[in-house]
Image 1 (cartoon, rainbow, N blue to C red):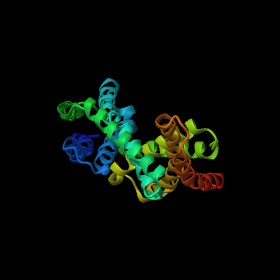
Image 2: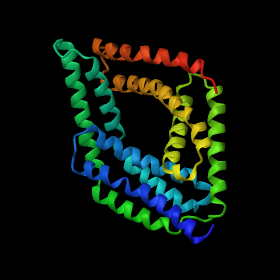
Image 3: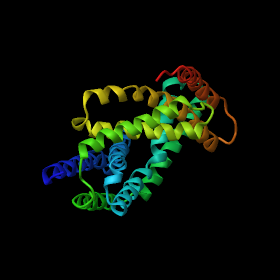
Image 4: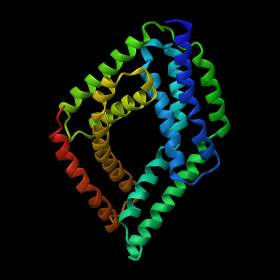
Length: 265
């Protein structure tokens, strides 16, 4: 691959990196819109997926250090995002006129605010900005092998998709850790495809389309399992609203289980 193609790839990485700036600015400004934290984490995941995709062609040490910094930037807000999602679920089904449900909602709001306080206590805005600058500097010399990149992209997408298809077919819907890992791999494939759209033909895009449904299905189950864990952490004493919330999600989980049993690939 010539200098022109390598420059295109570096631009691709820089574009993904620059996309982090806008949601990062909202996070720094203490924007209380839950989408601010969510988009900040999504844009970081997209760049990390791109790095994972091109891993065989990248300097291993540099790629590993970049990935570690990006992971740290996103993980500080993991609990914030989880409680934002949990709180949204509760708002959709709760009756604030019922005293016990009202108190439960207040407790969730307090936990959500506490998570934000703790996250911002650990978040260093200047460090995040400096990390993004440092990462951009590394992109210039990150590619160790930049030959036959178009063939590499096609083969890599095929390998990722083939591996995911195999694991969807043999998926044990009672094995939550396996479902969680599979969901991560599917989302990584889709994030990478989002950034590589200009390098991928229509046939491959069509092949990968069903993975959106798989990710959504696994997301319903994984979110439910994680919400159970969080509620057990927050409410040691069993309270009725906890079961109201879980039961409201359980019907979706049961329906999704049936869909996964009948998944055709």
